[in-house]
Image: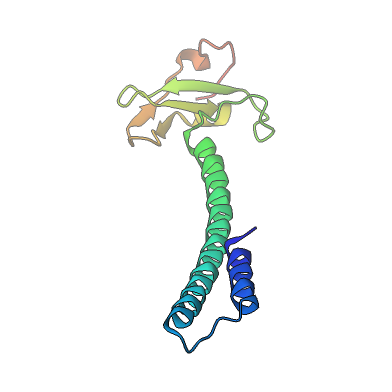
Length: 137
């Protein structure tokens, strides 16, 4: 039984007792029931609002979790369908951030670290790196 239902039950009891609103006890009892009714309606509204806010917070939490996965993942998930090429991990010597690069990015010869902005240069002698792939200068 909800609070609103309980107050309605009390109101029904008071009406069944045929409280006399002209007596002090009757006035007090009816005023208490009216106050309880107002409180019950306010609590009911607050419960509805909290339920709605809770659902919105859950949605925000899910969205934030997805965003965190995107931002804080190393991006080197070879099974990710967005990456068709082989990726190479490079550690920034300044901040230690791991950066994932594809062959096209390596071929450019340099990249700014997305974390600290340090310019990272890639120099391959004779166009080859330790990975066994040929890179053009």
